[in-house]
Image (tube, rainbow, N blue to C red):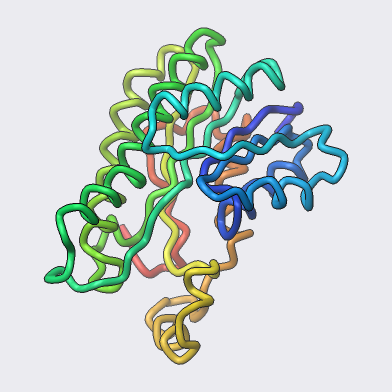
Amino acid sequence: MTAIKTVFITGAAQGLGAALASAFFAEGANVALTDVSGQVAETARQLDPSGARTWAHTLDVRDRTAFQRAFDACVARFGRVDVLINNAARTVHCSVWDIEPEEWDDVLAVNLRGVFFGCQIAGRHMMRHRAGRIINVSSNSGQSGSTFSGTHYSASKAGIFAVTRNFAATLAEHGVTVNAIAPGGTRTPQMDALPESMVEEFAKRIPVGRIASAKEVAAAAVFLASDAASYVTGTTLDVNGGLYMR
């Protein structure tokens, strides 16, 4: 990035969200870390003990009013938001036969409705400034399907591609780009909780032969937020080691 920007990240308490926060902080950006978990405050303190360039807020992305208030508070803190990263997600590993209606609705609410809310809220703000970047974190599971991640997870992540393209088409004339990132297997706390034998077996299916680090996925987001990506919009950047090729 050519200048200090303000980046608003959902689901930033741990895993990929924390890696995204760290990557943008290293680029000199102000970083707003939000998460449904109160742990996000500690993540922000570890990243920036002085608190000069970070701001933490507890946010449930399912609640549009709460999302708007958090976004407005971030604008009050830093003046504006230049980059929104919709990263918050819920993953439930289960059979298609075991998904109850309430669980289906909740996974879609976090993973897809929350992304839609973020695009609406940040999109209006960025239109006024005639500049901005929105990056939606999807998944390889939304492209190729996955019996492991859960049908509701895959469905929500597939929906992100449609939301991304629609907002990209709407906001392009206003100087705002909207793109998605689709990671494959990535080292996160969720993966760390799995048996290592299962992780190793999954890695064998990946052409490059290994699981991605969260830093590698975060680097893709830094690119999409940069001036170098000003002509890239409405697309999905695959970061999957060749697991899904198109």
